[in-house]
Image (tube, rainbow, N blue to C red):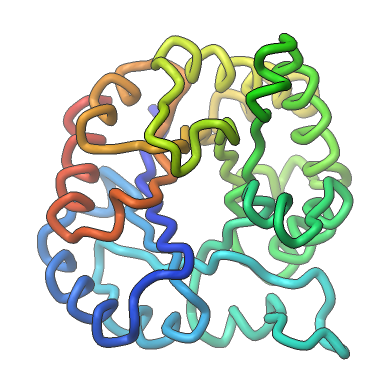
Length: 253
């Protein structure tokens, strides 16, 4: 059985004081780490503060990183810099990064390879736009994004990769893909991993659903056989909501 994941993506939210208050509120109320990977992906400026207070059952991740080790990249953060904070995870290829900051399939791949080289676990985001969904291109988009994101990722390293299916039309809109739609997409991704690697790797890899995930939808999503958790936006900003999401994920696998 694949261990589920609830990963909160705070995006550009929370000051240091607000973040610490959140951590103190949840740290002793989350499921045990052997039952669930509970993750908060926070703004870079507060990562070290949160890592120092994450406790046994919470892990901290970053929201982005640069693919180069160093250089004249104003405002960027390298994988080595993230290593020094103690984070374990990093989100790569979120649709907002692709849309607003010119992230491409090529740079996603470069970042994935660099993250793995530096012993960080990438949460790789893939997903189609509303127009692509309406034109029945969802599988085409997923095949391209997954295949290119994992180019040159070894069979040994794929075990440290998490994939998040996030239909762009459902992110921050309040719209949620039905659990059946979400499971179909995640199943397609799993079958891609089978073709790229092996049956056993396809069974092991954890695939999350993201897109307006909430305490009202998590139970139905977690009941699906190919959904191993959620990449959660707004619902992860509230401590009580995050605790409930984590507990629901454990109860409904």
